[in-house]
Image (cartoon, rainbow, N blue to C red):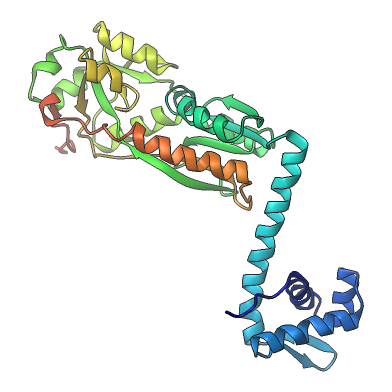
Length: 321
């Protein structure tokens, strides 16, 4: 097996590529010019490949050197991340986690995630901020938090979004509601019904409103509530038809206190995931946190498929006259 280049050789090649000079590369690294030259020659011998070419006073990488440079930069970036992780471990005990999450995720996803996260990092300093996705992204922009768990689709260009899971909204009604006993829901029934919806300033409401509009159906919210638990309770006592994600009402659906009915309007999915600065490299504690979010989310939505016997909506695209 060929020996791997040592770190001095890696740093020497990067410095020469950046400065286009052995002298300036040596100054950057704080070593002699001969030390840089020796590292490059040793690397070329080890790899049996010409890596550096001279063009007058200018030094440039060969094609092979350019290919190698890209790998070297990635390796050094990973080493620097590891160094940062160790520095945080020394400073905070076992790192620091600053996360913003929507109210719904704080209630239904994060408790299980944090239970497992605490086992991995019992001394990690944790800060969790709750709010709507747009509000949390503002905190991210001000560097008050490092990561956001929220709904995707309208994040700024300076951010990066990684999907954790997707879902579809459903109607939820009391078992005594007329819809619970029907095999299907007609268009005119949907347009006459009053709905219990999540806060109008939220991404969920914007998503829901655009979904109804694209299907040619008018959304008539009778109550706008900032808590999913309140929506479910209102639906149970027949105040209106709730609109929630199945994983939010799983226990009630399984217990039979609520009946879930597919929206049947365009079948649009919501994407939930992690938002951070586009150039940010996740630290070790953040990578483990994200991994646990993926793991718990799979369990959370595993039973969310609404059974055919629970009713089916016929609210497809409204025909134009």
